[in-house]
Length: 525
Image (cartoon, rainbow, N blue to C red; front, side):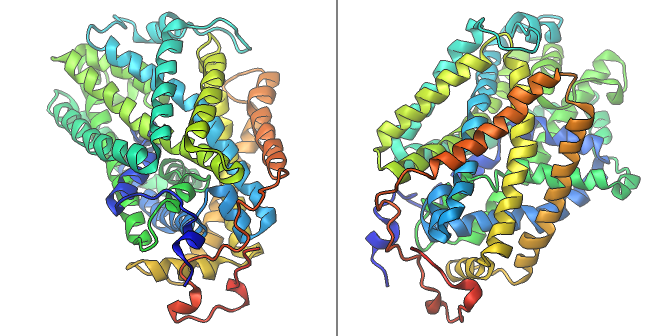
């Protein structure tokens, strides 16, 4: 058996399995759970949407989550190092995923800064009688699509605080930083948001909101777009196939129950999404009741507009508005921050793996560079439009393409699927059969490819949100191109042995009692 040093190389570890689970839940449960799922479910068949959602979770979400876990746990590295240990040329895919983490983290922090500001705004309802005007004109001071140099102080200051907090957590490390933050914040998030939901369902009109959300539209099940929406929601929500879960799994202990942990994370994430749907639409039902309109007549039922325009309008109508508002925006801050930490550990860890720099230096470098870019691009008067564009391309093009490449390369090109399946079964109580290979290698890539083709064709044919073509070229396609170029360039510097050419994955597959044929042979040099 390989020594602990050979297998782990002194790598940081979570001190307990619960720490890993809370961290993974913290990554999965983010802003999208609160502002994306309820709107997607409402627009995609209401209660009937839960059927394709559950199918997508079982046939793609959980299987690909297991794939991430298997890669990170077996090869003990962030995405670039783990993929390199599988096959050297695949390192570029790892850097592509790391680049996506960097890009998403840069703009994700801005939304957390908005939520932090609104946490304080909620105490006196600073948004007044017109939350839409306040958000776009008074707070963000939104201008035309372009590159603005006018910094909005009300956004820049909380953004600086967010990145300082990220720096502190990353510098503390896995056990003292990430683990402890999530062990405190995730239960706090669930308790606080549950209290918010309980309050929402007691409001007048809440039943109408819940009926609008959960009344099944069975005809929607015949629409392929509804099924694509379900698979899309699962992939974006679980934080899979772009390096986060690979990094977290690499910090897990050797004798960790990976698949059982994955099931806990997946179902906790989905439970929170349904909880968010109940809370959001109960509140929307109340707003419709106050305005004497139907829920279907309301606008801004998803995305940032839901959180920063529609919900402030709801809060202003409620008894105890300050408390309710602080609870809602506090939940947004916590959910967003734990997800941001997971994004940045993937970047910071990759730099530590390849260049051997200290944890503190990596934390300072990543937080400093990301913070400067965040302020330069997303705290200006063009910040909202830039964020919207980069977010659409990073998630709908970059992440989806990453997932397709990862599944196809590992399962079909390198034929590592059975080896990774054996690893999961060797360390876990919940065993995965060969159907897992079909789900990861066939079902997931098919739906992901359909998603990617649909989105790319839509942008080419119709544009996006009416933004100028040149703007989409720079901030949309340009972002993807930049990540691709960076991925190629970052493979060029030498590892100088830090990839441990004599690295031995654990456990040896021969110890599992299974025969490892040509398709599962591991090449570690």
